[in-house]
Image (cartoon, rainbow, N blue to C red):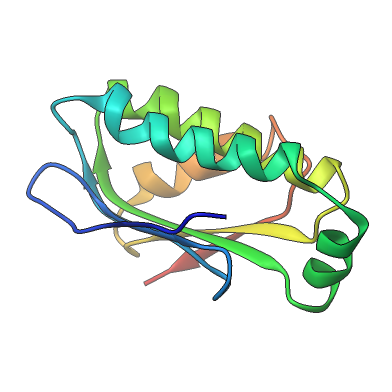
Length: 133
């Protein structure tokens, strides 16, 4: 599985999707100029994991879960669609037998970001932990 590493900019978050080292993190502000190009690669990566689920992978995640840490300071409506797509794909990994969970990190004072994350709980079965920072 290829590694995705993207440095944070003023308009896009940092991303690390590193299967070998079990690191799955998105961090920052999301309003990229080309939201399709930015998030398309992440959606494709998650879809690729889903299409390559094996018993070996299930055993690996049983011992060492895949924890997707999503920490957004802000995201625009264009990004929101892709964030939802990613959350649904992560949920599909969970539904297909992988030990997966989401950590939704938000600033303590940012109730809107907390509520946005909580809305996902109505749509998916994958566990989501809400962590105030």
